[in-house]
Length: 114
Image 1: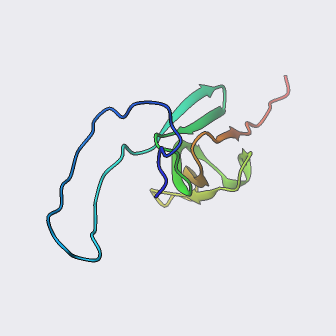
Image 2 (image 1 turned 180 degrees about the vertical axis):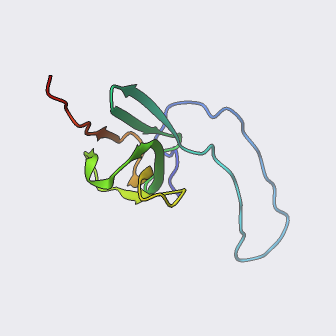
C-alpha cells in the first residue's frame, strides 16, 4: 500500500477499524478526492496543470477548446482529438497525465496581411 506513506502531514480524518474475525483476507474500499485541473488561458493558448492528493498516475485529463481543425492544434504532449458534434472540427482534447504535470495547448491562428 502506498498513498501518503512518507507524508509528515496529519490526515484530516482518522478511521479506526476493529475486525473480530479469523479470515485470511479482507477487502477494504476507500475513496480519495478526484484529480482536478488548473487552467491558465491566454490568447489562443491554455496551460494546464493536473493536481491531486494523493499523487496519481495515468490520469485521463481533458479540456475543451474552440472548434479548430486538428492540424492547427499544437501541444507539449501527445493528444487524442475529439469532435463532439461531428462537424469535422476538434472541440475537446484528451491526454494521459500524472499529478503535477503541465501541458501547453496552442491554437494556431491564420495571420492576415495588412
